[in-house]
Image (tube, rainbow over all chains, first blue to last red; front, side, top):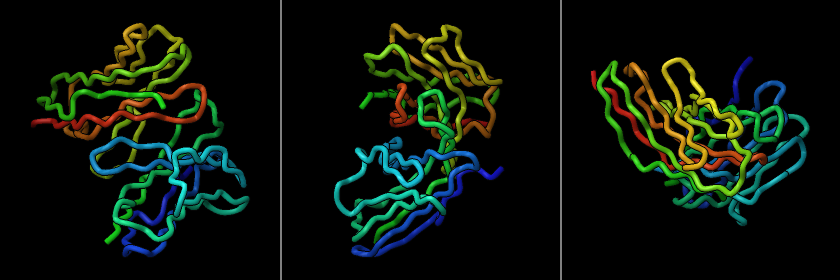
Length: 115
Length: 113
């Protein structure tokens, strides 16, 4: 049973380009969460999705950032027109349900570097 | 958003000794969950231990145990018989009955051989 799979592990983009980060949840998990970790900081919640639905995107910047979790395929976090401040590690997590009792399983993260 | 505070940016421990990491949090809720995650240099987030607030008994996982003081809103992690593989960043996290995890800023643990 593979864990949460994220790719790419490392991504380098120039300012103004687009970044796409992918996340395949654990088998049997239908809830996906994206977190961002800036250098020397803890993880910050960005967005919570179920299949074909965005449940809560309150932690995501209003512009340039979007997320989806289609019926088929991985969840995608998309950052358009990247800036240097977007450089961070982006973690995806999944759980079988969305309530507090369930432990989130994290992927290994995708490290985005913006030149 | 809930506030989780880890007041120790770095801790160092001798191999085989014990180290305690502190964590405090701010909440007005009575029902919630607390976690300690370990992040080694690989950056993978690994669950170390979790505690349900309604349980008075402190959680234990092998060499890892917590001291949960609900009234004081304190949730410290004790690592006993420290091993070189314990070297990592440790994050305390809080989750209420919704889905959001709030993390502290982390404590870097160094293990001296």
